[in-house]
Length: 368
Image (cartoon, rainbow, N blue to C red):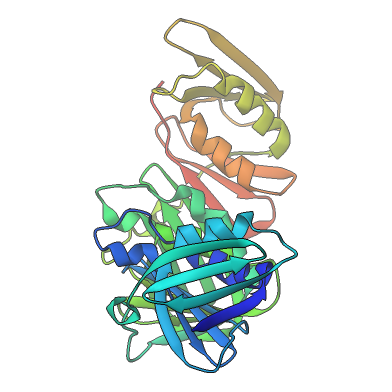
């Protein structure tokens, strides 16, 4: 029974879209597979890990009958990647096996029944629907994703807070030591709504979203979010829990502030970071009128010192930071300059973009 006949790239693209969330080892062996359904010319591809589900489709069907099966995602993807680009590829089913044929190459893969594949149950009703250009949503996620926690016992930190409020869409991420905030304005107006999207979903969306104006439709339900864009549909469970109040974390009354060249600060911190160790990433920043001095000393008493000229006339501040947190934000920003606001050695610092209130990054101090 013939399933697909097409050129390699027409089949490779939908497989690459859905294969990102597939784990090779899973408690349910069938979750290492993707669900392939053919109806006429249209072939749909679907993967899930129970928490997240991605589906897409392509006009690559061959043969008249409707058919569905599941096959190992990574194996099929690996086979397609090494086949010649110029030859047509056909997929066919017989005796619970899928045959992949291209030129004189032939592979036989085991299949599992489509009926056994567990798909995510969609919410019956969505509380809000927001539409954004793909590049706008990608920008929101890019600006804050690096601040998400990884495997924190405070599970609500292992994700990104998405807030819809009035005509603002806000993204916030924190690991308890630093916090990134970014907002964009939209034409629609909404009542306040906030959800926590899991880290894995965010990383997958960053891979799939493109720098284009085509729309993303976001449907939000109590425990689920659905995003539809291009020919892709992604459904994800949401993280339950109460996210920290980001408005309280944003410092408002720091008097000590200055603007500095982002690239110059980034290069200085990269050099000073060489003397830090894997266990201790602390650097000391001494800000005084006209000068910012950055130092690091490791366990062997080796030292790095960098000094930058700054336009600053405030009081002296001696403060320590985890250098990784500073490098993350400076590497991520694309602006020429950054605005830094400081309190004292025990207060968090605020990094922002001059003349732009839509992005803020708060980083806690560190005892050096």
